[in-house]
Length: 291
Image (cartoon, rainbow, N blue to C red; front, side, top):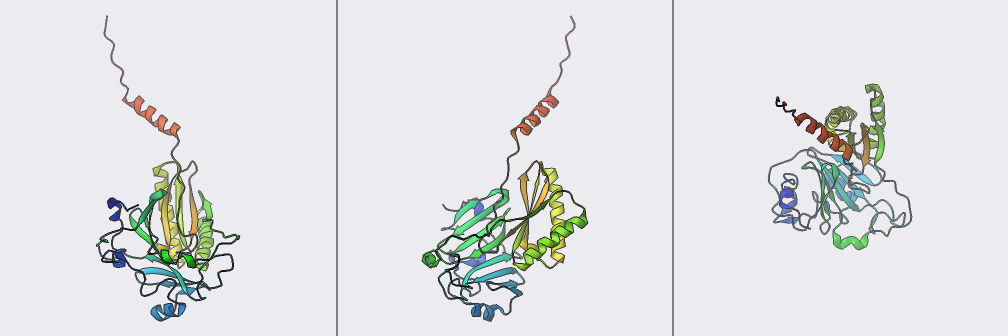
């Protein structure tokens, strides 16, 4: 499936440096999945802001970057690639700013998956590139091995991998109680170098608009705790009978990185009642004619 032309305009600025003559770049700043090593990463970028045995995290001026490396043999749980330990396996990039207004000349080779709540994903499996957008803004880029290298992926075995994104959810709380919940959320995001989504649900747009203001306050609070605001998306999750905020967690280009929000349709009864109210308002009583 070719990307519709009306959607191409979403990929401005951030994607332009990835294209040269209509061809997607195979690297990010000289780092190539399944070819570069952790030594290459350190040589090109220097010491990371944070690291685990499997990833190096960099907070650059214009991008947040998490570089994953193979840290164990892939015979454990079937995750990873058949490459030497220390080989780069994928790269996740979160833009901090949009540079320029040029757009790529062509998106041939991309498929498009439209999700709920304003998310659109662009996939080019042959080049190993995935682009995530939310409401028209590029929010994440993922560099993975090219399609022709699929034979190097580890064979999955029976194992349990937790990718459940829901960390916490709450409705009306005092600010002190909400900060305590956010503190726990921030600890999880920082400890495992994750990104978050604060999803708001409510019975109508007015309710959700108020909740989005609360979510914005929550993100500001988390940023004061040292979490870059670009790592936390604020999402209108749509209709729910109950009004609440859901704190979710996602990987940055690792396993469980795609965001999928399950939205509900507004009940038909509410729509019918709304139509009836409009009809009552427009109804006019005509004066009677005297005999």
